[in-house]
Amino acid sequence: RTGSDLEMLLRHDLRPRLVKGAYAGDYDDYEEIQNRLKRHVLRVRDTSGAISIGTHDPRILAWLADALREERHRIHLGFLMGLADATKEGLAGAGWTVWEYVPVGTASRPYILRRERYLAEHRVRGTAPAP
Image (cartoon, rainbow, N blue to C red):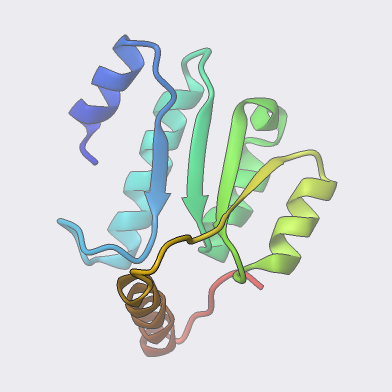
């Protein structure tokens, strides 16, 4: 989402959920997407509110664990079922609040296709999602 969307949520004291995931967006530059998410996370950190963050990006997760360690009580990290299980366990063991999203329903094809595209993009970049 845009910075103005985030500001609107913060003005109304709503908890934003920032996701860097497998959805098509306005940007396809990997570094810009990471930097934009970091800027938005830091903007919320400057408030007193909570934030939900969804990502399997190991670089973002390492940054969060380092830069926001003292703020972890206000941060909820969301992961998809079946991905990053070791990372989820490690973060939860370190005191982070970890949520696992479970897909339900019969329309699973779009979900599966997004995951396949996400994993293929990692292969092209020579990177990997969080373990």
